[in-house]
Image (tube, rainbow, N blue to C red):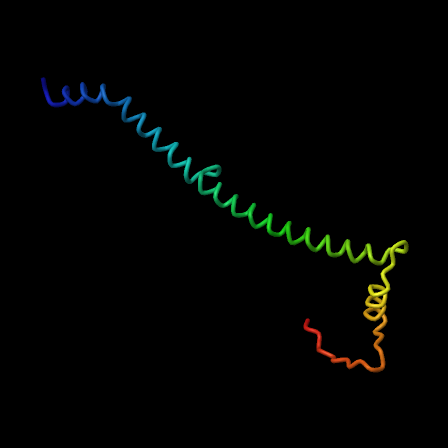
Length: 106
């Protein structure tokens, strides 16, 4: 038996194991690094968390604005809110108030 025949005989027995190991390595790599892998999942979870924070801030702003609008409805008019809005819109102040003008930043 020559050396080459011995190598060929042993190679027949391990080719399936080597092929299986290569397939396992391929799928393991793509399970971690692929488009739908673990790293992509972690990035997506962080984006979802950031979007939920933005959504909660937007909901809070919406509730605040809805409450202000409800105070200005004709059936439930709040005098303080009406006075506040008229002062802002018409630049109205009382004679005993001091107005401090600040430059607007653009």
